[in-house]
Picture (cartoon, rainbow, N blue to C red):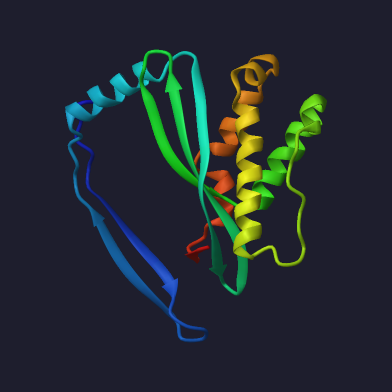
Length: 185
């Protein structure tokens, strides 16, 4: 609620220091906050703008290699736009692994048999971190994504747009990015 004051809260965090060395405590005091009434107005405006039909636009814009805790794998940066009929557009980027795209492909194939015939790059077990392999796979994955996002395809396959949106949203599918170093190919 606009103008509402949130009371002060104190937290105490207790965590182990080292094996067999006891624990340490730390206190955190969260001060009273008075929400900005303009924030509520902006949120209401955004909610109003993000109602109704929309189209999805997505392009794989980059590929790279992630080194994370001893594991190395390819990653694809995807630029996403959610464009509403009223002209409002939300934009974001997500990172996906080949295995994420393969998971989407399997779900689409299972639910929409005719889309299972679309060209999808196979899993390559050797040299799959080579720059040329990653770039070729990036092009093929992008071609697959573009076909799924075509208006004629989205409109004739119930719930396909929601499935692809879930794949493209930030969150659950971001399992591949855990803070490891991303190298450009």
